[in-house]
Length: 130
Image (cartoon, rainbow, N blue to C red; front, top):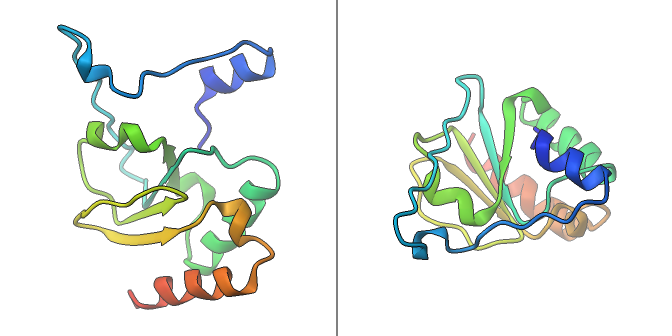
C-alpha cells in the first residue's frame, strides 16, 4: 500500500514534491495508473495512512472482508490518471467524484478514529451497499 520510493525519501528526511497540475507543462504526458487485479479498494487521500491510521484502516477493512493487501492509496490529484474502475473508492478528507464504484466519503482517517459519530456515518455508508 505504501509508495516505496516516496517512503524511503521521507525516512531519509529528503523533501519531495509532486506537481498538482502537471498537465500545464508543455508536452507533459501523465503516467497512467494501473491497479493490480487483486485491488478491491482505492483510498484517495492527501494523507498516506501510517501508524495508528493504518491500524484503523485495517480494522475497517476487516469489517468489509478486505485486507490491506487489497488496498491501494493515491493522492487526489492522481485520480484522473486511473485507468480502470475498482470495486470500492474511499475519498478520505477530499472531494469525491462520480465513479462506477461503491464510493465512501469521509473526513481524514485521523478524524474518524475515536469519533463515534464519524465511525457510525462510515459504517452506514458501508452498509448501504449490502
